[in-house]
Length: 340
Image 1: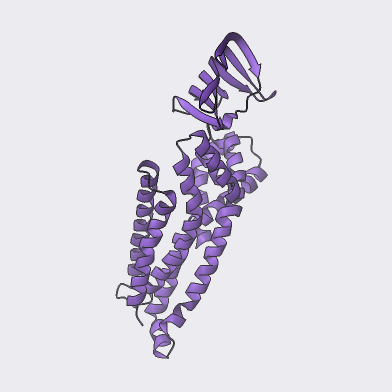
Image 2: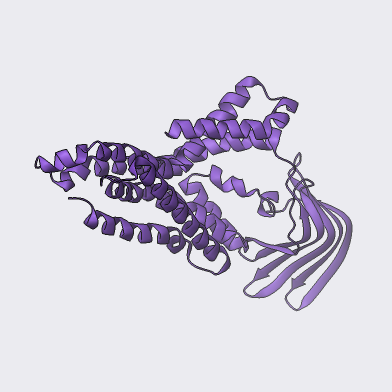
């Protein structure tokens, strides 16, 4: 089932990107192994919980319609014994999905992302203005506007604070990073240095200098966090929080979701077996329709909690676990009401 859905996803992606792929200079090896192989790994893990849910509904409902479940229960097999293989297998899938989400998928996403940036994606643009970043404790950089394509921006300033006092401030009309020499070119700079009770002011029409500032601190694609493993993502979030980024909540959601989503496999499996093990007049179709409705509700609640984390301030760990808590409670109730 996962393989079938991944193939469908590949077909849709090919139809969407075929023009860009044909125009690019990517080789067949790059397209297949750097992009679509990693694309399959990413989407296979992304869709795994819902697809496993549909699969459980389908084959359990088929057993129930053939009265195989009734036959097993009537022969003396307890319902707990009947459910045991579901519990064991879904538990194993949770572990596999955790490993995939935290380590394997980020590595696959890195290869996929590199291909997309090289051949498919347009230049990154940033609409935000008045961007502040704390590069390191006490060192604050500012751009009124920043262009990732030019690796620089306009109306640049740099301040250094020590013990609550301003020690150094530079204001310039522009600043651009030069990758070849790893330095910044600063134009029309006014520099103020505060030494004890005196102030030293001087001007520079052009200043080429090394600064502890990386262009990535001001402009990153959102997909970049999907290429980071557990340790890299934790360090990245801490750096973004220290620099004053407004996207910290989004990055925390990505991190917490990697742990919470796999447990959805176990919860949805228990919901699926509890629903589908009872013989229904509507047959397999009625069970699958109910599965789709439950799946959409699950996704809808997940989106609401994610938005609340980014805009209302709900903690990310709570936002990603609320759907699991609600549907876990539903799973327990359905299990208690299941045909015994």
